[in-house]
Amino acid sequence: MNFLRNRLVVLGLVLLGTLLLYLLLPSMRQGSMEPSLHIQQRMGHILATPPMPPSGANITVRTGQLPGDPPIFFREALPVDSAGRQILPKLQMVLLHGQAFSSKTWEELGTLGLLASNGYQALALDLPGYGNSPDSESVKTDQARVNLLKRFLEALGVRAPVLLSPSMSGHYSLPFLQRHSAQLHGFIPIAPVGTRGITPQEYHDIQTPTLIVYGELDTNLGAQSHKNLIQLPNHSVVKLAGARHACYMDKPREFHQAMLKFLQKLD
Ligand SMILES: *[C@@H]1O[C@H](CO)[C@@H](O)[C@H](O)[C@H]1NC(C)=O
Ligand SMILES: *[C@@H]1O[C@H](CO)[C@@H](O)[C@H](O)[C@H]1NC(C)=O
Image (cartoon, rainbow, N blue to C red; front, side, top):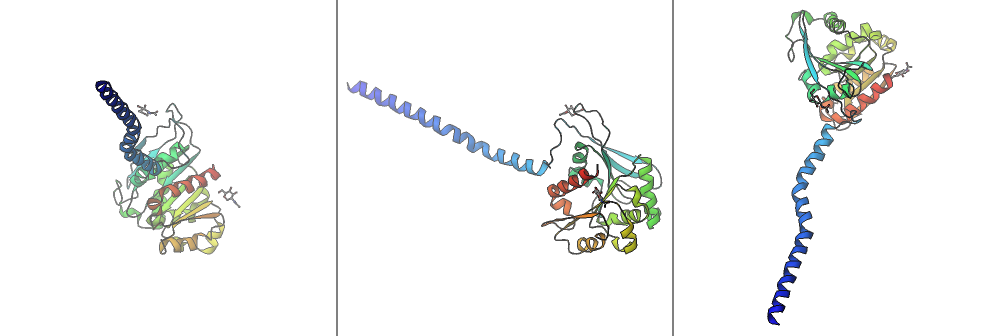
């Protein structure tokens, strides 16, 4: 009798243990998996910039160098179909960069890949003296800088691009806008220098659709360029909350969203 009761107790304990293990295991598993899930989700937030690229898009960024004086280094991302074949881009976009940056910035931020996966050709160049482009005495005047951009566009078969221009690159983009605005399908100035070099009458006559982007905390160049650029008749403004001068670095997701929305209206 005693022996039987002992066996029953042991059996009961084993059953109880099994039940406990059964109940506890999933939460133990979850506990150990949760951190990696969290990381994945957070990375997803940083990397996935809506709208999501079409599935199977496989974008490679190639680099090249346009010979000449000075030679111009560039990066390019082209749209492809789901089989990886190149397709005709909806629009061509040319990206300049600020003083502390280069074309690499747009590759690392995911902007080039994002543009290509949304059907646009994206070309980012290193301005003379930055990144992989040697400095040159020949770009010391507005006209020389305009000529450099023209040479680049012509050589790469770019016609009527959307020009994106942050900060220092305003030395190139604003003289270009002033002289050749009809050649620009769109303009995305991001707190550029040089907005005071265009007269009110000249601003008034420029028809290029323009998206003015700047950081809320950029009370210097951001606010100043905004004040001048709103003279452009066809403009819209995106002020990125909590962002500093390089607002696209501070708020890449919001910046990318605003850029794609603007491009959608143009293509
Ligand atoms: C992307 O391209 C690489 C190299 O061409 C290929 O190995 C890979 O399978 C492609 N991935 C997708 C999702 O198409
Ligand atoms: C302003 O630009 C938009 C594209 O962003 C275009 O659809 C619209 O027609 C333009 N408006 C004028 C008055 O040119």
